[in-house]
Amino acid sequence: MASAIFVFGLAFGSFLNVCIYRLPLGLSVVSPRSACPECKQPIASYDNIPVLSWMILGGRCRHCKTRISARYLMIELLTGLLFLACYWHFGLNLSTLKYCTFAFLLLGLIFTDAETKLLPDKMTLPGLALGVTFSLFVPVNDLASQFLPGVVNLPVSGDVSARLLSLVDSLLGAAVGASFIYGAGAIYLRWRGAEGMGFGDVKLMAMVGAFLGIKLTIFTIFTASLAGSFFGLTTVFIVWMKRTRRFMKRLADAPAARRRAWQSAQVVYRNYQMPFGVFLGSMALIALFFGNRFLRWYGGFF
Image 1 (cartoon, rainbow, N blue to C red):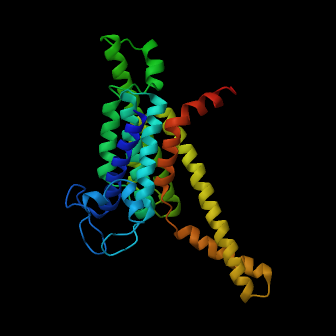
Image 2 (tube, rainbow, N blue to C red; image 1 turned 90 degrees about the horizontal axis):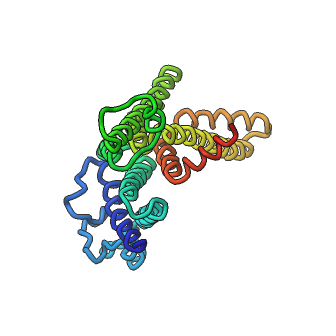
Image 3 (cartoon, one colour; image 1 turned 60 degrees about the vertical axis):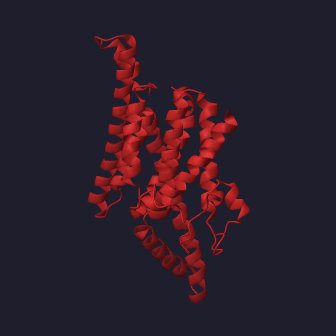
């Protein structure tokens, strides 16, 4: 069963590559069939086998020998591994289907944002709808499910009540996730006079909240902010070091070279558009598998 799920994930990873390439361009993911972007030759079915075809062809087009990015191989393998991880973590049940869907969407959005700085609505909005729908069948089990039963008695059976509370958890998670990112973006826009968060990030966090609920949504935002800050500071430091070495060759005064390098690094920092969706999506995947464990560990200190 594990092998079958892994192969199933590889096939979905192959389709995910199509989505990552075509959705930002506004193209259909169904037709026409896949073709080499260089020579426009359609890719034969025997050259479209996940992982194996890339390895057999040596990462090159059969016809024009143009190099095929290793990203295609990486996404197929990552999708297969994520499907396998969901199966091992949740077992053979509806939860695995729910979180395989979630992982598939997140992986596509992470790579799309990294390559194009776009988060397509055709992935985030259906993902939001799927997260809310899945909450009726796979319990989110967050704040509403834990605290409301002792406060509010719904005039329905216990099973229906649990499903409705799970739906409330999903909707609350979506609202909190979207509101937090929207609010942060609005504050940044007023403070710096430039857009810091796009609506794609807002919709992404609404999707994450619908799947994970409030607690893991907050965990995702907090850890993504830390990861993004660390990445930004590291980038500025690397730029400063490289520019310092460059200016040292031109200027005899080392302090002057460092000051010029710092000014240059600040310009890079101001103008660089960080694909924050990469960090949000990555931390959402970590929250999926390890978030509750971390919160239990952290809660043990209080």
